Every structure is written in structure tokens, then in C-alpha cells.
Picture 1 (cartoon, rainbow, N blue to C red):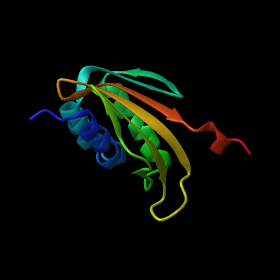
Picture 2: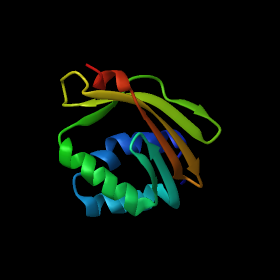
Picture 3: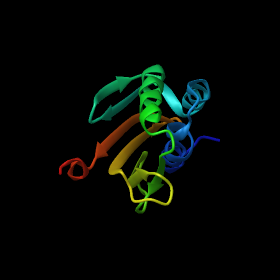
Picture 4: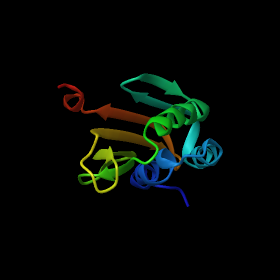
Length: 123
């Protein structure tokens, strides 16, 4: 059974982007992302599962214990899902927040857009 865009979005938060082991994450990405996937985020554009895995590995190196929490309703339109989220130590205030837009194709992520709320970084 193919995953829906909202299921894929939740898999990102609860499995893929919190996985510390790059080999396990690569297997999760192979199940959930198309070969030609694209992730656009404040740091740039990443094409392909291998590149996303490398970027996620770097994120986990800096924030290994951080978890993601969906902070609002997941909205769905056709094959696109979006939601607001926060990330930080469990039980603590969020270190950063953002919004993701995910486009699904044939039950896999084809495009992921991540917006980070910049106001948290301005002091």
C-alpha cells in the first residue's frame, strides 16, 4: 500500500530525520523517497537520497537528541502535505521551529521544502 503525503511527512519527523545511524536512515530513505527527490531548505538544494542522508547525518551530529513535534494540523491538498513543527530536547522549549511542505509521487517523497523561522536566530 502506498503511503500518503501526510504519512510520509510524519515518517520524516518520527523516523527518518531522527535516525542516528546513516545506514538505517539510507534504508528508510530508499523506502520513502524517490530516486530523483529534491530537498530545498535554508542551506540550499539537495538532490537525491544520498545527499539527503549526508545532510541529515550532519544535522544529527549537532543535535543528536533533538526530536520533532508537529505543532499544528497537517493540511493536505491533492498530493501535498504541510505542517508547522518545532525541534528541541524532549520536554524543553523548542530550539527552532519551521514549516515543511512535502510532495508525494507514487507513495514516496518527490519534493520536500523546509522553511526555518528566522526570528529564533535573531538576538
